[in-house]
Image 1 (cartoon, one colour):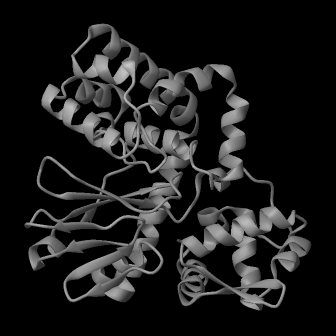
Image 2 (image 1 turned 135 degrees about the vertical axis):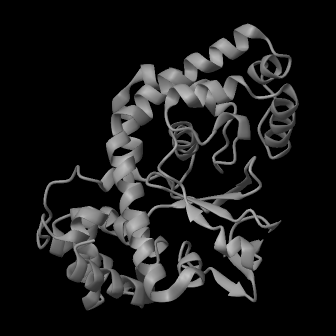
Image 3 (image 1 turned 180 degrees about the horizontal axis):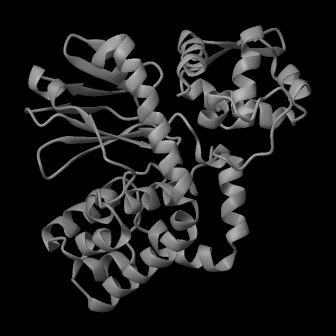
Length: 330
């Protein structure tokens, strides 16, 4: 399956990055992440530590947001803060609300009393939704907002470096492993067959430091296409780790990836096995495997099986990140 985005020359010229992470978009992605079977262990652990209050605030949102992250469009406006986001949610037309609830139900979510209440413009249902959004935002987003912002900024800085070296087409193809161009069409490997034909509005790129799923697309009111993708720096490893053996806490790559993940990337220059990574860094094999998998998703590491072992090697993109960061302090 593949996501195809058909560009015109005007669309390429209109492609740009968002100004920053959007609170309600990040909240929707966090709710989706909590339902994913491959959720990062550190992300899941952080949520468990928040306790029953957070679980109660998230429960209503699970009714609206699937594990795929493709929730209703009226729930995740690209707002600058929570207040503006809630205002946009409340101003959604009933036509949009109904059509979006129908869409998520067609894609597998069961119809719930909350959905019925929102669709018929029931005041109590909308007040309940707002209360859930506020409480879940306080539990899942507000506490980590500086790190979400740091993840966004470092990804944009890195993509800018890639664009300077490889051009816009090269940068766009590098947003997700395995992406490629066929003429003026960007093909991205995803679980479903999706096709977008742009009409001059361009693409708005939004990296998320907590989303690890496949890229998500959706049309925006101004005619452009929103493309959400996993940022290079994952949330659980931003500025919260103790220094790992072999990692310099001041090095630029450590600031970008997190200290342990930076050390893993450097060790892949030697093509180690997962067990060797764990032994070198003093971490569990499961943790080493998780770090290598995240780096592989970012296109920085490739993995091959060698007998019973699995070996990890640094890709050309990984080499470029290490050398560029060292030279420029990205």
